[in-house]
Length: 152
Image 1 (cartoon, rainbow, N blue to C red):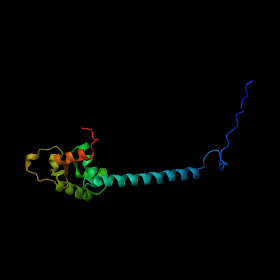
Image 2: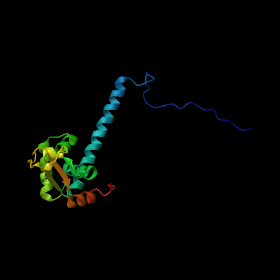
Image 3: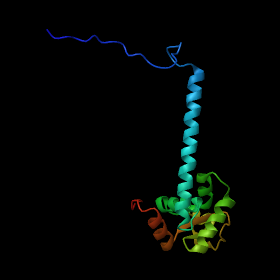
Image 4: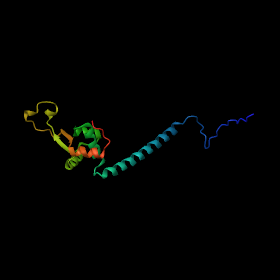
């Protein structure tokens, strides 16, 4: 006859909780700990990205701007500022640095040609309507820095 071992309940080590389900305080503490961990991971990844982009003499903002122009095509300066949630002056400063580098170009558009009206009436360009485009050099730069980008 074969000996059968009795199955015993596994004892858990440590403090036993008096509550069957976690309390709101426990959930809040766990959520806060997860939030802190995510913030630390984001800081680490940002620092790694910043050091990688420094080899190409690009800031994180310049990289984001070039990638946006590559994926979405030419855009208005105001739309870029709205998308990045920063001031138009800040976007303008970064675009000017990319323009000096030869990676982007600015094009001022008259208000009527932007709305589809006839642009041959001799209207002056509206200084508020600025379209930003990638140049050939800018496209090759962002494709080299960000090689996993699919061609649209």
